[in-house]
Image (cartoon, rainbow, N blue to C red):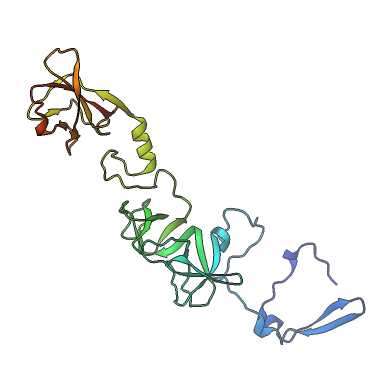
Length: 292
């Protein structure tokens, strides 16, 4: 019998080459079985070069190996209704042994992953939580766009007054495009909140913190009230301090008469006083929050 120093020296045999072959299978010290590969032919799947990539002299954990495990998945089972590739899914709370049931998510529901293949009800599906999903129509987006799940669809311009979830980044804009799934990337720079009160211009947590860090409290010099209002020397982007102004009786008067309530104009450029307070001609000082 010829000796071989490497498995590479052995001839590669395919399914058709082995039909009719019989081999001896040793199963114990005094026991052996004869195996006919003819009986196994229906169980053998023969792949051609177009169906697989040869895995030789490679390190399995090397980043160049693109395999199914190149993304994070869990096995989810569609509940009652089929789910398709690209469907964002929510958890179905029904529990049966170790089965995780999922359903297509609707508006304002929490996303736990995206389906990677069309899957029938009751059939295990690969639900991706991190990784690259290919074959998605991204033509309405641009490369680098952040995608939010809101009102049951993906959008790159969410309404931050409505519940949304940051789920992916667009890798290319194409009919057969790719998106990078990352369901745990809701960091401060992308978390949004409702700033409709207007006291902060920013609408994400991180930029709001940066804006607040750049603010300081200022106070006007004495300004004469005319037409029940004054014009601020600069915009009060952070609003007035307690909406209170100090009122002086005449030019150069040393003492404050009292404090009066006031409001900020919608454009943040003027301070408004109540007509009934009759403060025209008086001087005032107003503390406000400005951005450096």
